[in-house]
Image 1 (cartoon, one colour):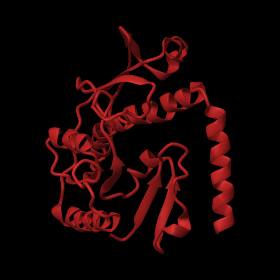
Image 2 (cartoon, helix red, strand yellow; image 1 turned 180 degrees about the vertical axis):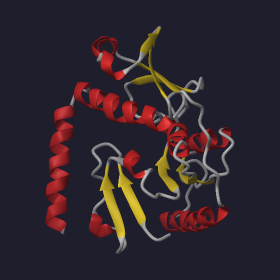
Image 3 (cartoon, one colour; image 1 turned 120 degrees about the vertical axis):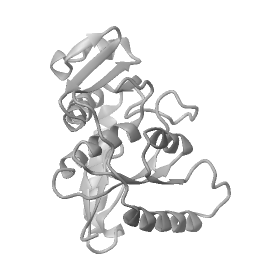
Amino acid sequence: PDEIVVVDWHLTNHNLHQNELPSGVALIRGGEDKLLGVGIENVFLVGFHGAVGTPPKYAHSFSYVIKDLVVNGKKSAGESTVWAYTAGSVGVPIALLTGDRFAIEEVISLGLETVCVDTKSEWGAVSPASKHKGIELAAEQALTKNVKPLSSPSPFVVKFSFKSLKMALHFPSKYFDRREGEYFVIEKPTAYEAYDIFHNKVGLYIRSMMLGHKLLSIFERKCKTQEKALT
């Protein structure tokens, strides 16, 4: 590829440092959806996990406060599904996915030919170096496989519910189109537009309501200070 862009968007978006990446690799914190329409040819999803409702204790869909996430009628959808539809809506394929087997099964269920690497469930005592080598080989395969993007219907519908009654009661009406029982419904012409609302608006609401959000802000400032000291 002519250019590689790494998007750090987990938790506070401060999990990586620029000086730890190879020369010429750009690092962006958040705003991942804005990159899809500016020449990105392939998306690699790295370190993904099972959706809410799958067995692992760490399983969730974007946030642990989400009780259920329904995408195109599919209950217990995860981040892999949302990303596949979002990228696909602008003609970009998910070429590679690394993570647990539940995230992999989710992508396979969509009919995609994404190259997948199970980094949690089946590696056992395999060394980190061997895992890294396996991912490198998979990445090379992904770039030559010509994976097709996932087509998405229009309108695109995302439904979600909260575990907390308080969060449901205070959720701003401007962030959703209608209610269906306990579910809040976002319906937009494309998956890209639906993701923009769900991730940026709903995500902002969740972060503002979560107990301990001030601690996250403190952690984020600390990471920025550490990064500045390293550069």
